Length: 82
Image 1 (cartoon, rainbow, N blue to C red):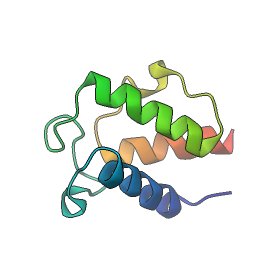
Image 2: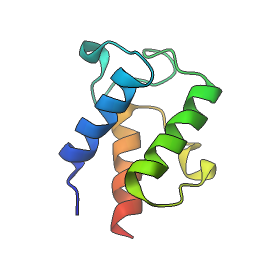
Image 3: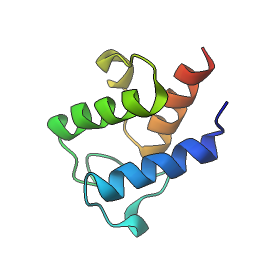
């Protein structure tokens, strides 16, 4: 079972390597859309990457309310503990 810290570290790697975001901008409070300039296509790509990482089927609906990096960590953690 992964901790939220481990999920955050992996998510940060994805955001830096796949989305070319500066690591120093990525915090749990960072807003995906306003601060990290992600759009809906980026969000879909992120869901695909998280599905590969978690091995869980992630519904786009589960990510409708996600706004911050911390929200993503919480959502992935919840999926992995189900």
